[in-house]
Image 1: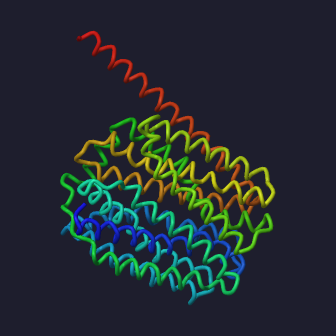
Image 2: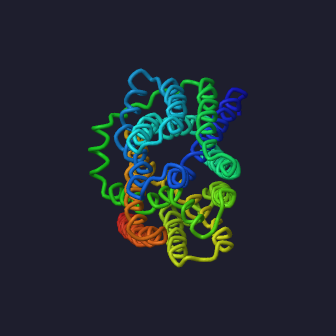
Length: 396
């Protein structure tokens, strides 16, 4: 690898480390903060927590088009990352529900650009420099896990520290992004035309439902797992330890995902991730002992550590090359946006009506549907391969 590529690799890894440290400082502990300090009810907390995912659905494509307009992906990423951190400080300035909601909206608008734009830069770089994308993305998991552990401990001293950490680390990430090289613009990335072409592919449409049903609960869990642990008797420090174990467990599985995919297949690995998620949500519904919950967080490595790389690679495989970037944008919007919003918002309603354990029953039921759809895709793929092989044998 060239020296310049090594420097770029380190910058990308550093960006993911700091950016996801910021995400880990805020999202897992925000629900607990609003519940204890803001004194908001379940409906209000659910609305605030679901604001970011909703905004992602609408603004991720917009940020993508803005970045592509003059090939300004790096500049847009730098500005939006810094702006998200600045608006995150707004949580400290207001205590009323509607003002907090406005802060959540403004933070979400700029934060929605960070993941797709950084992923776009990383994917282009990894393809050009022949670097494993998972070796870049795992630094995000590392940053997220460290953040929840460290900020969980500091939050017991002062819960407001999560907002200062969110600002500081995102601002640091924005400075690192200034050193990113300008990659060649992706050709043929017409959002509207690409969306029309993609939604004519049955496999793509079905896998979007899978992403919604399997990935959405995993993201919503970041908001409600803290409340779950608190109800089981956990402390801020305990919440941090649990998230650290859960997120760090993703790293070895992200590194091993490539070998498993080559051995089993993309959909099969995604199905394993979905099945493990189903077992996890069902287990939490049964109100297990707190000590067992801490040990159980390791299974997140099986679920997200396998599903994230397998899902992204499957999308790239079934999408026409000219609209791959658009496919990734839609994939991110469905999982990080629609799925996360829906399960977070409905989770708030369930939490207000019933309890936090009922949220995980809801997660389990819909994850099982996503798993069944994945199994259907596997069977459909085998049938297609069987027909193709029969035709090939007949022709030869």
